[in-house]
Length: 296
Image 1 (cartoon, rainbow, N blue to C red):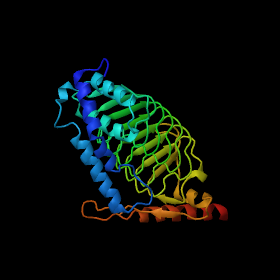
Image 2 (image 1 turned 30 degrees about the vertical axis):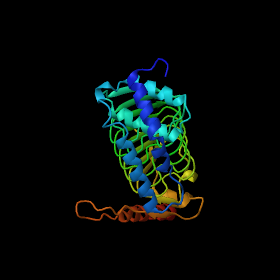
Image 3 (image 1 turned 90 degrees about the vertical axis):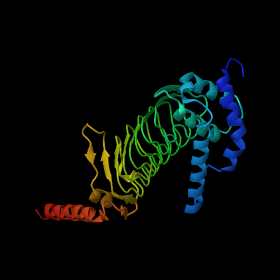
Image 4 (image 1 turned 60 degrees about the vertical axis):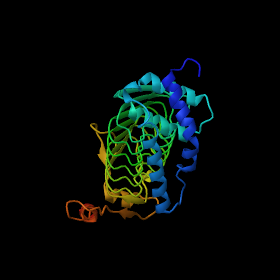
Protein backbone atom coordinates (compact mmCIF):
# COMPACT_ATOMS: atom_id res chain seq x y z
CA UNK A 1 0.00 0.00 0.00
CA UNK A 2 1.93 3.02 -1.24
CA UNK A 3 1.88 6.10 0.95
CA UNK A 4 -0.56 4.66 3.49
CA UNK A 5 0.02 4.59 7.22
CA UNK A 6 0.59 1.37 9.09
CA UNK A 7 -2.77 1.72 10.81
CA UNK A 8 -4.62 2.07 7.49
CA UNK A 9 -2.81 -1.02 6.22
CA UNK A 10 -3.96 -3.01 9.25
CA UNK A 11 -7.57 -1.88 8.84
CA UNK A 12 -7.71 -2.77 5.15
CA UNK A 13 -6.14 -6.15 5.89
CA UNK A 14 -8.78 -6.82 8.53
CA UNK A 15 -11.57 -5.92 6.11
CA UNK A 16 -10.09 -8.19 3.46
CA UNK A 17 -9.88 -11.07 5.93
CA UNK A 18 -13.49 -10.56 6.97
CA UNK A 19 -14.76 -10.33 3.40
CA UNK A 20 -16.04 -13.95 3.25
CA UNK A 21 -18.07 -13.37 6.41
CA UNK A 22 -19.68 -10.27 4.96
CA UNK A 23 -20.45 -12.04 1.69
CA UNK A 24 -22.03 -15.03 3.44
CA UNK A 25 -24.25 -12.78 5.56
CA UNK A 26 -26.35 -12.04 2.44
CA UNK A 27 -26.90 -8.46 3.46
CA UNK A 28 -28.60 -7.36 0.26
CA UNK A 29 -32.33 -7.23 0.91
CA UNK A 30 -34.36 -9.10 -1.67
CA UNK A 31 -38.02 -8.41 -2.50
CA UNK A 32 -40.83 -10.68 -1.27
CA UNK A 33 -38.75 -12.31 1.46
CA UNK A 34 -40.50 -13.66 4.56
CA UNK A 35 -40.30 -11.42 7.61
CA UNK A 36 -38.23 -13.97 9.54
CA UNK A 37 -35.59 -14.07 6.80
CA UNK A 38 -35.40 -10.27 6.73
CA UNK A 39 -34.94 -10.16 10.51
CA UNK A 40 -32.22 -12.79 10.30
CA UNK A 41 -30.32 -10.79 7.69
CA UNK A 42 -30.67 -7.64 9.78
CA UNK A 43 -29.21 -9.44 12.79
CA UNK A 44 -26.27 -10.74 10.73
CA UNK A 45 -25.70 -7.26 9.33
CA UNK A 46 -25.54 -5.73 12.82
CA UNK A 47 -23.20 -8.44 14.14
CA UNK A 48 -20.83 -7.85 11.25
CA UNK A 49 -20.95 -4.07 11.73
CA UNK A 50 -20.33 -4.27 15.48
CA UNK A 51 -17.52 -6.81 15.32
CA UNK A 52 -15.39 -5.21 12.61
CA UNK A 53 -13.17 -2.79 14.53
CA UNK A 54 -14.41 -2.04 18.00
CA UNK A 55 -12.15 -4.55 19.76
CA UNK A 56 -9.21 -4.13 17.41
CA UNK A 57 -8.24 -0.46 17.34
CA UNK A 58 -7.96 2.57 19.57
CA UNK A 59 -10.60 5.09 18.53
CA UNK A 60 -8.25 8.00 19.19
CA UNK A 61 -6.04 6.74 16.37
CA UNK A 62 -8.88 6.69 13.81
CA UNK A 63 -8.66 10.15 12.28
CA UNK A 64 -10.36 11.62 9.24
CA UNK A 65 -7.14 11.02 7.28
CA UNK A 66 -7.11 7.35 8.29
CA UNK A 67 -10.69 6.86 7.11
CA UNK A 68 -9.94 8.50 3.77
CA UNK A 69 -6.87 6.32 3.26
CA UNK A 70 -8.94 3.19 3.88
CA UNK A 71 -11.62 4.35 1.44
CA UNK A 72 -9.08 5.01 -1.30
CA UNK A 73 -7.48 1.63 -0.81
CA UNK A 74 -10.85 -0.17 -0.92
CA UNK A 75 -11.77 1.75 -4.07
CA UNK A 76 -8.60 0.58 -5.75
CA UNK A 77 -9.53 -3.07 -5.13
CA UNK A 78 -12.34 -5.42 -6.12
CA UNK A 79 -14.66 -4.99 -3.16
CA UNK A 80 -18.37 -4.98 -3.71
CA UNK A 81 -19.73 -1.59 -2.76
CA UNK A 82 -22.00 -3.26 -0.19
CA UNK A 83 -19.28 -4.89 1.89
CA UNK A 84 -16.91 -1.94 1.87
CA UNK A 85 -19.68 0.51 2.77
CA UNK A 86 -20.54 -1.29 5.98
CA UNK A 87 -16.86 -1.37 6.95
CA UNK A 88 -16.48 2.36 6.24
CA UNK A 89 -19.55 3.12 8.37
CA UNK A 90 -18.24 1.09 11.29
CA UNK A 91 -14.91 2.91 11.01
CA UNK A 92 -16.62 6.30 11.01
CA UNK A 93 -18.56 5.46 14.16
CA UNK A 94 -15.43 4.19 15.86
CA UNK A 95 -13.47 7.41 15.25
CA UNK A 96 -13.04 9.78 18.18
CA UNK A 97 -13.62 12.72 15.82
CA UNK A 98 -17.16 14.09 15.73
CA UNK A 99 -16.88 15.96 12.41
CA UNK A 100 -15.48 14.01 9.48
CA UNK A 101 -15.14 14.87 5.78
CA UNK A 102 -14.63 12.09 3.22
CA UNK A 103 -14.55 11.81 -0.56
CA UNK A 104 -15.81 8.74 -2.41
CA UNK A 105 -15.24 7.74 -6.02
CA UNK A 106 -17.50 4.69 -5.78
CA UNK A 107 -21.22 4.79 -4.77
CA UNK A 108 -20.81 2.75 -1.58
CA UNK A 109 -23.91 1.22 -0.01
CA UNK A 110 -24.70 1.59 3.70
CA UNK A 111 -22.63 4.72 4.30
CA UNK A 112 -23.64 6.27 7.63
CA UNK A 113 -25.30 3.09 8.89
CA UNK A 114 -26.06 3.45 12.64
CA UNK A 115 -24.49 6.88 12.34
CA UNK A 116 -23.73 9.05 15.36
CA UNK A 117 -21.31 11.54 13.76
CA UNK A 118 -21.40 14.65 11.57
CA UNK A 119 -20.23 13.44 8.17
CA UNK A 120 -19.71 15.42 4.96
CA UNK A 121 -19.45 13.20 1.88
CA UNK A 122 -18.14 14.46 -1.45
CA UNK A 123 -19.39 12.30 -4.31
CA UNK A 124 -22.35 10.11 -5.21
CA UNK A 125 -23.41 7.41 -2.74
CA UNK A 126 -25.26 4.11 -3.11
CA UNK A 127 -28.20 2.44 -1.39
CA UNK A 128 -29.21 2.65 2.30
CA UNK A 129 -27.50 5.93 3.13
CA UNK A 130 -27.96 6.56 6.86
CA UNK A 131 -29.78 3.29 7.49
CA UNK A 132 -30.88 3.07 11.15
CA UNK A 133 -28.83 6.16 12.02
CA UNK A 134 -29.24 7.36 15.59
CA UNK A 135 -28.03 10.95 15.60
CA UNK A 136 -25.67 13.40 13.97
CA UNK A 137 -25.84 14.74 10.44
CA UNK A 138 -24.91 13.30 7.05
CA UNK A 139 -24.45 15.74 4.16
CA UNK A 140 -23.90 14.46 0.63
CA UNK A 141 -22.60 16.73 -2.11
CA UNK A 142 -23.92 14.49 -4.86
CA UNK A 143 -26.73 12.05 -5.57
CA UNK A 144 -27.93 9.06 -3.54
CA UNK A 145 -29.44 5.83 -4.76
CA UNK A 146 -32.28 3.83 -3.16
CA UNK A 147 -33.61 3.54 0.44
CA UNK A 148 -32.03 6.71 1.84
CA UNK A 149 -32.73 6.98 5.58
CA UNK A 150 -34.36 3.58 5.89
CA UNK A 151 -35.46 2.98 9.51
CA UNK A 152 -33.52 6.01 10.71
CA UNK A 153 -34.33 6.95 14.30
CA UNK A 154 -32.80 10.42 14.60
CA UNK A 155 -30.38 12.91 13.16
CA UNK A 156 -30.49 14.65 9.81
CA UNK A 157 -29.61 13.63 6.25
CA UNK A 158 -29.11 16.26 3.54
CA UNK A 159 -28.64 15.18 -0.08
CA UNK A 160 -27.62 18.07 -2.32
CA UNK A 161 -28.76 16.19 -5.40
CA UNK A 162 -31.45 13.66 -6.22
CA UNK A 163 -32.45 10.41 -4.51
CA UNK A 164 -33.86 7.27 -6.10
CA UNK A 165 -36.86 5.17 -5.01
CA UNK A 166 -38.10 4.39 -1.47
CA UNK A 167 -36.34 7.27 0.29
CA UNK A 168 -37.40 7.39 3.94
CA UNK A 169 -38.70 3.82 3.97
CA UNK A 170 -39.88 2.84 7.47
CA UNK A 171 -38.47 6.03 9.03
CA UNK A 172 -39.06 6.28 12.77
CA UNK A 173 -37.63 9.75 13.37
CA UNK A 174 -35.10 12.28 12.19
CA UNK A 175 -35.07 14.45 9.08
CA UNK A 176 -34.37 13.79 5.41
CA UNK A 177 -33.80 16.82 3.14
CA UNK A 178 -33.42 16.40 -0.62
CA UNK A 179 -32.35 19.36 -2.77
CA UNK A 180 -33.30 17.66 -6.04
CA UNK A 181 -35.99 15.20 -7.10
CA UNK A 182 -37.03 11.97 -5.40
CA UNK A 183 -37.99 8.67 -7.00
CA UNK A 184 -41.12 6.61 -6.49
CA UNK A 185 -42.50 5.42 -3.11
CA UNK A 186 -41.21 8.43 -1.20
CA UNK A 187 -41.90 7.92 2.52
CA UNK A 188 -43.18 4.37 2.11
CA UNK A 189 -44.23 2.87 5.47
CA UNK A 190 -42.72 5.74 7.45
CA UNK A 191 -43.90 6.05 11.04
CA UNK A 192 -42.24 9.30 12.13
CA UNK A 193 -39.79 12.02 11.21
CA UNK A 194 -39.96 14.46 8.33
CA UNK A 195 -39.03 14.36 4.64
CA UNK A 196 -38.53 17.52 2.59
CA UNK A 197 -38.02 17.40 -1.19
CA UNK A 198 -37.14 20.65 -2.96
CA UNK A 199 -38.27 19.31 -6.32
CA UNK A 200 -40.57 16.60 -7.71
CA UNK A 201 -41.34 13.10 -6.45
CA UNK A 202 -42.32 9.99 -8.36
CA UNK A 203 -45.43 7.83 -8.04
CA UNK A 204 -46.49 6.30 -4.75
CA UNK A 205 -45.84 9.21 -2.37
CA UNK A 206 -46.76 8.26 1.24
CA UNK A 207 -47.57 4.64 0.42
CA UNK A 208 -48.56 2.79 3.62
CA UNK A 209 -47.52 5.86 5.63
CA UNK A 210 -48.37 5.57 9.33
CA UNK A 211 -47.03 8.85 10.70
CA UNK A 212 -44.57 11.66 10.11
CA UNK A 213 -44.62 14.58 7.69
CA UNK A 214 -43.74 14.91 4.01
CA UNK A 215 -43.17 18.14 2.08
CA UNK A 216 -42.72 18.09 -1.70
CA UNK A 217 -42.23 21.46 -3.38
CA UNK A 218 -43.75 20.47 -6.71
CA UNK A 219 -46.16 17.82 -5.44
CA UNK A 220 -48.77 16.59 -7.92
CA UNK A 221 -51.90 14.88 -6.63
CA UNK A 222 -51.71 12.05 -9.14
CA UNK A 223 -48.36 11.04 -7.63
CA UNK A 224 -49.90 10.23 -4.24
CA UNK A 225 -50.28 6.53 -3.53
CA UNK A 226 -53.80 5.04 -3.46
CA UNK A 227 -52.52 3.01 -0.48
CA UNK A 228 -52.00 6.07 1.63
CA UNK A 229 -51.42 6.14 5.36
CA UNK A 230 -52.06 8.67 8.06
CA UNK A 231 -49.49 11.41 8.25
CA UNK A 232 -49.20 15.01 7.13
CA UNK A 233 -48.50 15.78 3.48
CA UNK A 234 -47.78 19.23 2.09
CA UNK A 235 -47.22 20.87 -1.28
CA UNK A 236 -44.42 23.38 -0.80
CA UNK A 237 -41.60 23.70 1.72
CA UNK A 238 -41.55 24.19 5.51
CA UNK A 239 -41.55 27.82 6.57
CA UNK A 240 -42.90 28.96 3.24
CA UNK A 241 -46.41 29.07 1.78
CA UNK A 242 -46.89 25.32 2.00
CA UNK A 243 -50.32 23.87 1.34
CA UNK A 244 -51.57 20.89 3.39
CA UNK A 245 -53.11 18.10 1.33
CA UNK A 246 -56.48 17.20 2.81
CA UNK A 247 -57.74 13.65 2.88
CA UNK A 248 -60.84 14.59 0.90
CA UNK A 249 -58.70 15.94 -1.93
CA UNK A 250 -56.91 12.62 -2.12
CA UNK A 251 -60.20 10.77 -2.30
CA UNK A 252 -61.53 13.02 -5.05
CA UNK A 253 -58.40 13.14 -7.20
CA UNK A 254 -57.05 9.61 -6.90
CA UNK A 255 -56.36 8.36 -10.41
CA UNK A 256 -57.31 4.87 -9.19
CA UNK A 257 -60.79 5.91 -8.05
CA UNK A 258 -60.26 4.48 -4.58
CA UNK A 259 -57.91 4.83 -1.62
CA UNK A 260 -56.75 2.40 1.07
CA UNK A 261 -55.90 3.94 4.45
CA UNK A 262 -53.31 2.56 6.86
CA UNK A 263 -53.51 3.30 10.57
CA UNK A 264 -50.88 3.23 13.29
CA UNK A 265 -51.94 0.82 16.04
CA UNK A 266 -48.73 0.94 18.05
CA UNK A 267 -49.14 0.89 21.81
CA UNK A 268 -48.41 4.25 23.42
CA UNK A 269 -48.66 4.82 27.18
CA UNK A 270 -51.09 1.96 27.63
CA UNK A 271 -53.42 3.09 24.86
CA UNK A 272 -53.94 2.02 21.27
CA UNK A 273 -54.61 5.28 19.41
CA UNK A 274 -56.86 4.71 16.41
CA UNK A 275 -56.09 7.59 14.12
CA UNK A 276 -58.79 6.43 11.73
CA UNK A 277 -61.23 8.56 13.73
CA UNK A 278 -59.32 11.73 12.82
CA UNK A 279 -59.42 10.79 9.15
CA UNK A 280 -63.14 10.07 9.17
CA UNK A 281 -63.85 13.40 10.86
CA UNK A 282 -61.83 15.21 8.21
CA UNK A 283 -63.60 13.36 5.40
CA UNK A 284 -67.07 14.12 6.78
CA UNK A 285 -66.18 17.76 7.39
CA UNK A 286 -64.95 18.11 3.82
CA UNK A 287 -68.03 16.32 2.49
CA UNK A 288 -70.41 18.56 4.46
CA UNK A 289 -68.52 21.62 3.32
CA UNK A 290 -68.84 20.49 -0.31
CA UNK A 291 -72.56 19.77 0.06
CA UNK A 292 -73.13 23.16 1.66
CA UNK A 293 -71.31 25.04 -1.08
CA UNK A 294 -73.20 23.17 -3.81
CA UNK A 295 -76.51 23.95 -2.12
CA UNK A 296 -75.92 27.70 -2.00
